[in-house]
Length: 183
Image 1 (cartoon, rainbow, N blue to C red):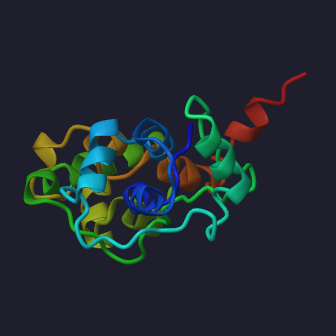
Image 2 (tube, one colour):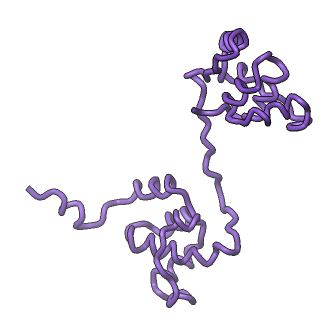
Image 3 (spheres, rainbow, N blue to C red):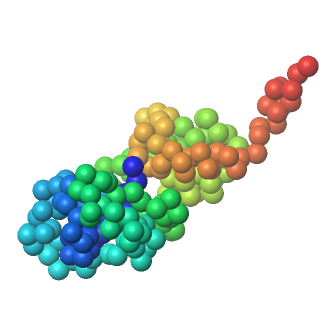
């Protein structure tokens, strides 16, 4: 079940503006009933502004009224509610010091499995420099003896969806496309 955008703020609004049970609010917002009770008691979310789910198109007033009348009923999110996906941030991102030594391994893995991937695509995918990529490709990296190709997704340097998107834009290797078309 999908949860509303900003579930805690939505729970604050539902506690303040409806007579729904804590269990109903907790199930709709993907929270524990005790956390919703803490919101009602003022222990959790102090000073937080509530987010009206009806204004955001996530709930209808009729649905709220239906569930207020029947404590056993559960709130259903509108099917037209937008599913929010966090967009990939632009620009460079911070890589913790402990993970920086993993970047050459990820570069080696990408070069081994996707040799047609350009330096710019690799740099954008795992957040490294073209000089580092060229050093790994040419085996002139200062630590080239210890580089072991490892999957950048497993190393936590990129997500599987971003890797799949980068791979889908690759041009097929010469000779590979003709090999699959034998009659």
